[in-house]
Amino acid sequence: MLTDLIIKNFAIIDALHVSFQPGLNMLTGETGAGKSIIIDAVNLILGGRASADMIRTGEDEAVVECLFDLAGQEDIRAMLEESGIDTDTELLIKRVVSRSGRNRVFMNGGMATTSLLGDIAPQLVNIYGQHESQTLLRPENHLYLLDGFAGIVPLRERYVGLHEEFRKTREELRQLEDNERDAARRTDLLSFQSGEIAEAALLAGEDVELGQERECLLHAEKLIRASRGAYDALYDGEGALLGTLRTIIAEVEAAGRVDGTLAVSSARLNEAYLSLEDAALSLRDYGARLEADPGRLQEVDDRLDLIHRLKRKYAPTIEEILAYKLEVDAELDTLVHREERHGELEEKLQRLELALREEGRELTRQRTEAAKRLCSAMERELHELAMKNAHFDVAFTSHDEPRATGMERVEFLFSPNPGEAPKPLARIASGGELSRLMLAMKQIHPESDVPTLIFDEVDTGIGGAVSAMVGKKLKRVSRNQQVLCITHHPQVAAFADHHFKVNKATESGRTRTSVDLLAGDARVMEVARMLSGAKITEKTLEHAREMMEDAQCAGPARKT
Image 1 (cartoon, rainbow, N blue to C red):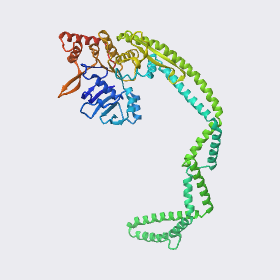
Image 2: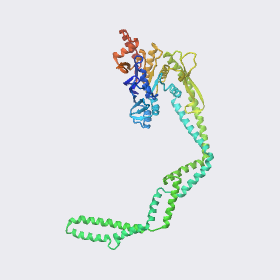
Image 3: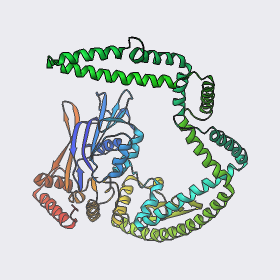
Image 4: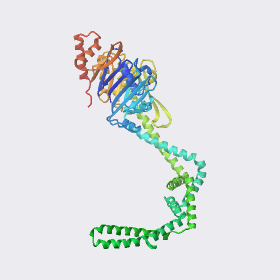
């Protein structure tokens, strides 16, 4: 839901902050006050084209910010998190348009791309009017609108799942057939690689151990001399350190019997003696194990050379070589059993295609039936919206083979005047007609994932009782979604939950736009102005009050 709109130096707006609420938000004001400029600003946030012409005269840049409440919008939050945008339950989108051409997008304070903005924005707001209509002008959306109206989304999802499995199976079969010519050559290569690695009988970490052993073998004589010399100096040689230490310990122990304070020193000397004795014995054992062995050194060098050659051919580590062998063996198994696999895949593909076509035919049948109901319902709604001669149709174009969305393409067609054949909406519908088409669609299929709808020029070319009907329908839509509507009709404005007046004034030779939230008598005064213009009488005020009271009685309460 759109909670706040902030505009700076945009067109004739110098600074503006509007807080919107759930329900039906009406924007009214005199012609030229800047109502459509507000929609232009929101459209910029939705990814609309940025231009230096948008910047207020005398300023270097224009800034538009929109704050959205994302409560319940888990899909959008997940998309933002995947794109590195930190968010909890709010999203602040900021767009800066500069005269230098350096236009920027920010989301929750971090830089973002216009591409990400284009992915996120249509899930937040839809604008219906002369500027944009993100849903109805895109034929790819028509199928989903029809399926939603028909209540067959679970059937479509089942079909989509089948199609995805069918696609993957067909691709696997195609790859198997494409590889048939190279299969024998590939089998020979993989067999050789698997055999070569297996014959080496590699062990994880053995290259490290062998490297250490090689160093010892290369310097065996030096290590033997060092260990044996140290042992002799500590334990077994003439004047060995441990012998001297034993004499010292005996003398200190004797002195300790006279002065007990020497007991600590005596204990430490004994600990040192035991540690040195352990070290001496370990050096003796180490030296006894060592011997110069040129034959073993050659074996180690040969083994390390083999491992080095395998690393150059297959992978930089033994662990990765062994993992590569597992991949090779798996591919070999597939190649060896490819004929068997080919038959399995062909059988599976035929089975899936039969099931897919059966589901597709049922999907087509239910769509065709729903299309008839949709056309009747849409024309009924459009007639109530002062489009008495409007004709609405759904065109089906069959595909040669099952596609991801079904066996056909669907596009909505429309004719506003008698005698004219229905044509695609993008080619024929005006802004006001698009607004009323979407309003009609929302009456017969109110559910939508888009939390905020903006209707611009929804009441173009109508008046009187039809205007009241438009207001009632907008009120009904606002039970499920936030609605913002620009209107010139008091009959429509009377249904507002929140009424904003857009004002234009001249100060110090500059034009500026402001927005006021109306309540009580101020709101009655605005509805009266819309009824009679500049001259407002007591009778006009009474008429405005009656109109607002009737609207509140007729309009359904908003869900909470």
